[in-house]
Amino acid sequence: MNTDRRKIIDIIPPPGAARVLVTSGFLGSIGTGMFLTGSALYYTRVIHLSPLQVGMGLSLAGLIGMATSVLLGRLADRTGPRVILVSLHLFRIFAYIGMALVTNFWQFLIAVVLVTSADRAGPPANQALVGRIFEKTDRLRTMAYLRAFRNVGLGLGALLAGLAVESDASWAYRLLVFGNAISFIPMVFLVARLKRFERPVPAVPDPVGEPSKPIAVLAQPLREIPFLSVSLANGFLMLHDSILFVALPLWIVGYTEAPPFMVAVVLIINTMFTAFGQVWWTRMAESLSDATRALTTCGTVLAFASVAIGVAHYGDALTASVLVVVGVLLLTAGENLHAAAAWQISYDLSPAGQQTQYLAVFNLGSNVHDTAGPMVITALGVSAGPPGWLGLAAIFLLASTVERYSVGWTSRTRAAADLSGRLHVSEATQ
Image (cartoon, rainbow, N blue to C red; front, side, top):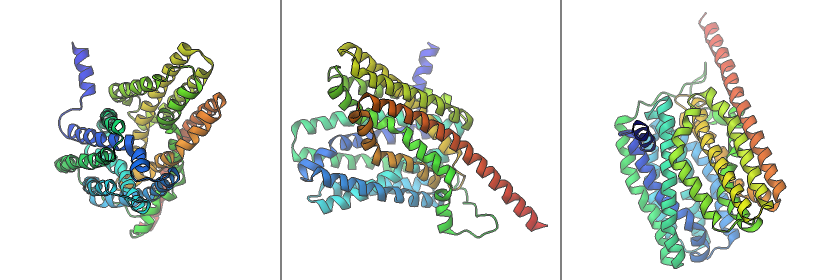
């Protein structure tokens, strides 16, 4: 009985700030799931854009969104991430309403830049808010609850979007976009309620011996090469996301003997294991040293997942199905462990008072993945055949090694700079 009760406790977030945050994220992810599932069809079948126009708009929006996330991260460090997050949710309500009303390419371009900029700035602000409310292990577990419930919400949203796709009516697709806009309304009120849990905003430290220079401070995380290396390597590890949603469906249907319904099976497996297991994986990344070591395990597991999926090409229907399931189980374990390690690393490497902008720069690796990941994955995981999956395995092993080295590089560089700064201050006071 005690074991069962503990399992339930691990699935349901505790009362208070964690439950409010998770409820907010869950409701928002339903709208996001609706929009993401039907957005491509909305762009092409309702607005009547060509795939090239859609690709151009999304790429431009992604680039602008990267810059916007860092700028808003700097602002969030001054005002507090909760204020920025509430403002972003309010902005998204009106931005997505605008998206639901567009009728041509230029309107689409403006709308997609606005919504993408807000969407890209949201995750680092949300993560910073978790860091502002919770400490150490609690913040990691809260991020795990958020990811688990977000997965469930995305699945529910996708099911609702299926009704619109089935009807294939313009009004139904527009309703999906309106539904996404509406999902941000409860998020505004729920996040605003967290004010009483939020700790005071720490002051941004000035450079040693210099007055604060806003432009210099803003550029600081972008000039820190070791930290940028951590971010970039993390982006390569996130290729597991594109494997699941882009390469795997194409691979199962076009390059293996596994029945097509296995596409749905693997997505269900991934969603269920993430929903029920993400909190558990945080136990392997409760400190910076644990999280750094976890990167090696993560890279190795993702490499084996790639090999299993690639080898499925050579089996009969049953063998291919088994290998695909084994591959997606390993892929899910690797992505959940990677998420836990990335949260811990990004928190511990983000200085107090500058946390949101550092988290935004850390998320640049994720943004690069969102832009280039599908292209890389289709080139290696689909077009290149089984050898391409070996290439992906090598990328995961290399990326985990580089990120692990870069974490140590960042820590050593900062320790040396801190020592130099103390010596400078000591000499100046003599």
